[in-house]
Image (cartoon, rainbow, N blue to C red; front, top):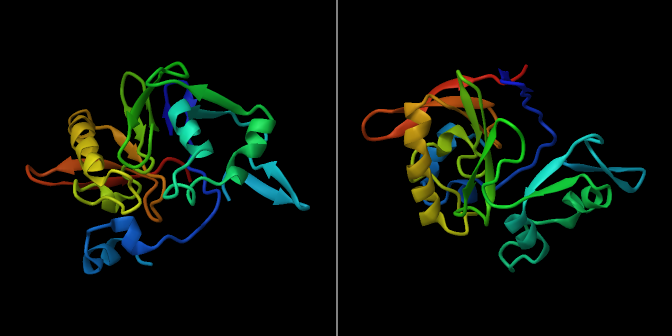
Amino acid sequence: MQIGPYTLYSIETSEFALDGGAMFGIIPKPLWEKKAPSGGNTQLIDGRLEPTFQNATYWVQSENWELANSPSEKDAGSFMSDDWSVLEENEMIQFVDGKESFLPGIENHLTYGHTTGMMHPIIGDSSQKLIYMADLIPMAAHIPLPWVMAYDIHPVQTVEEKREILPKIVDEEWTIFFEHDPVFQAAKVDFDGKHYQLKEGVTISE
């Protein structure tokens, strides 16, 4: 997909399993199992930790970096230093403060329900916009307002953050990009007057 000067790709870097009950929180299993039937930045090469993408630059929210390096007991299992230590050592990390734009043509939306200072880059031009949903809406099944993860540190806030951004996504026909969906790379969203829901899947790259 091309948006302005940026060519976008959906890159599958690894596979891992998460508990379905945790991914869908309060949503009963008979509902979520119909929608989601049950690596990353670094890799080990000859026993040595190496960046997976040697030429990449990683833009990291300062607030989230602080949490990652001093996590609570609850968050400690989510922040593994092997995921970023070699990136820092190789000076591949650039820090972003607040909602400042870090690249031309890219806006920066922040949320705090899932984790502190989670970034949602918005890439746009005169004809279209795409927002990276990260863990605010990790899968198409999480589009409805109450469908949030048990991993969220503030699930009620997650619902309100979805309530804030989804009307703009629908009204302006943005594409939303998923981080964890096994079927859809991205999608358009529909609102039927009562519920937000998947309108159609969007392919970012083959």
